[in-house]
Amino acid sequence: MREVAIVSFAQSKHARRDLRNEVEILMPVVHEAVERSGIARPFDFTCSGSTDFLQGQPFAFVLALDAAGAWPPIPESHVEMDAAWALYEAWVKIQTGEAETALVYGFGKSSPGDLPEVLSRQLDPYVLAPLWPDAVSLAALQARAWLEKTGRSEGDLAAVAARSRRDAKANPYATVAGDFEVAKLLAEPPVASPLRRHDCAPISDGAAALVLVAGERARQVCRRPAWIRGIDHRIEPHALGARDLTSSPSTRLAGEQAGVGRAPVDLAELHAPFTHQEWILREALGLGEDVVINPSGGALAANPMMAAGLVRIGEAARRIHEGGARRAVAHATSGPCLQQNLVCVLEGE
Image 1 (tube, helix red, strand yellow):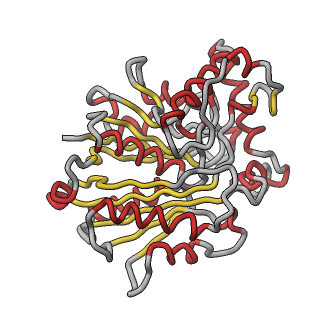
Image 2: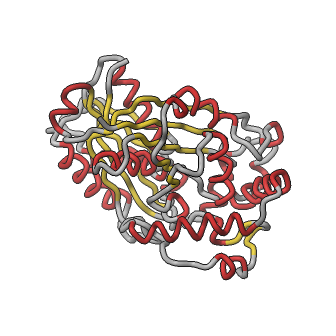
């Protein structure tokens, strides 16, 4: 396998509502990631993640190429998913020997529409989608099943929210941050029992970008590259009734294949848009109490659709770049109730 490292990462200030269009949000982020990488354009490969359902038009990602710079013509691809999967495609491209450098970016502007209803379009088109179950209601069913299975309480969920928001105080890109008491959070009314507003990721407009470089060139352009030592993604059945929603076997398998358990982990950035999902993911990945979880605040502090998973990988890489971690795990999810999961293990030298 070829050595591949993340050498730079940039993200926007994720806002509840950003008045700029997608290209205006994305362009400064791409420019910052490129400048930090020390790599001159054009890149050998460019790959992005976004969804037409948020932008309300087909092939909307083509417009974003204005931010990446598509002239003269560049080798380019796109995934209709979180950009963490665009990173995976770029990593594979480098493994084939067809590229040495890759620019990866993702973006999403959720504020113009009703995101929970938009996400219902991910469901099967014959049985569930015609019922329009929103994403929060489906997550609430999962949360209720998990609480009854484990015997944990809604206070355990609120504790995750309080810790995430507290940690996000040091994250200048977060949408939600601050000190919150668990008791006061529990006094809020449910939005879909047992979930309250603090149990759900905030609506966020934003973008993220990073640069991948192979081998010795990564060491030349970055003082402390974040090497991708393992990466894998798995998917579970589309039909929710065919899954045990209280666990995440796809995350467990992806973590095993990526090598999470081969050495101690300093921190993990988990893409958990709902508080109970952090508990499920921790168990699936076998992360102990000594592992720092979501020091950025995670998706509960900022959740730009189609970029939040890439942000988890970028935040983990940034900690390695800065010397704050030697080995980190990053996770991304897509689909209802943790249907698809990607796990990436990063290491410094």
